[in-house]
Figure 1 (cartoon, rainbow, N blue to C red):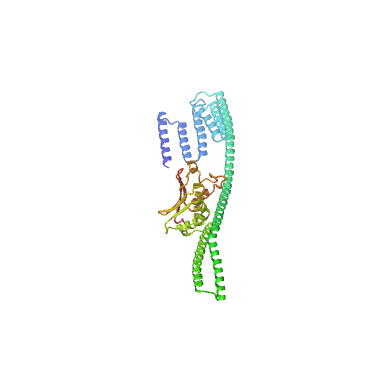
Figure 2 (figure 1 turned 30 degrees about the horizontal axis):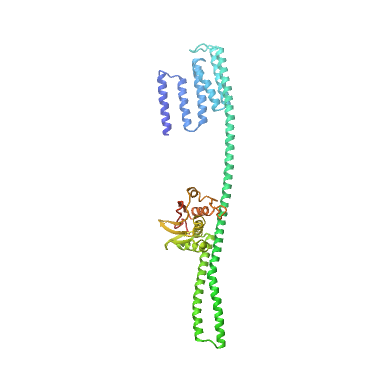
Length: 441
């Protein structure tokens, strides 16, 4: 309404100055032309563009017709009618242009007939040539306007066809993008599952190797004790058991029992750790857990497979950092970071070490995995999380470990995974995630 009021005020000022310049004359054609402008402006402001075009074309025709009727065929009003016909052709089409041409020609003939019948007004002499010239001008204008309108319609149709084709192409492209995105998501999930199974397979091999020592010790001790019990039983049956034999057996049995208990306890601890890791990584269940325990379990499960590399792994995480998230994916990220440090950062470094630390900032946990290895060049660091990017192509590197870890950190744990590295100064991977994942448990 504010803009409409400003527009009407502007039109009123134009009307005032128009009348002033016309010596305050009240020519109907002038008044009518200004009134047409006001009505057209109101319709444009209201969004009625087609109605505004009709008002413009027919208003110009009527105002020009009034001038012709009052002042003759040679008045300035006669120049307005071709403009109205041309505007009608451009804005409204061939039918409107022909209609205005017919009305304008009829008006010219009517004025000529009235003049020939002696109904003379104060106008210049009107001849048949003037009338025919007007009819010819209006007809030619209508033909040109119709031709231009047809051309515009054709071009408009082509533009519409191109736009429709572009819309169809966009729809097809969007469909293809959606299909490819779904396929990519499916492939990424398969890659994550494959990496998960590969990690678990590596852990199984390491745990199996690690279990050989305590179980082997327990088996050796149990068989030795079985032999000593058999010997002691034979001595008892033969009546040759002495006090020294019994004392020696009891001392030996106590040592062997302690060693057996220690070996079985070690094996049970390894099985418990691996069982919890396997459950977490296969089920991906959200639960409450202690951060240091989850990290320690994953390190313990991975330690046997990297023991031969001579790399020391230190876990310096304070007890009491309680989290509520997904320990399975968290453990997979920790495992991938450790394997990446061993395979890439510390390859061939017998004095290498990996330190795992954690700190809590407000509601966020920052888990740092630092290795004192070879570090990364800037171009490697820029692409380290890209899928299938590896510096050990064909040498055991798949290029998926860090990519999958980054995706887990962002999409599952609700955090982020970043890296800081300098050539020759090692690398630090920082996993940031909320202590309590938003949402209910």
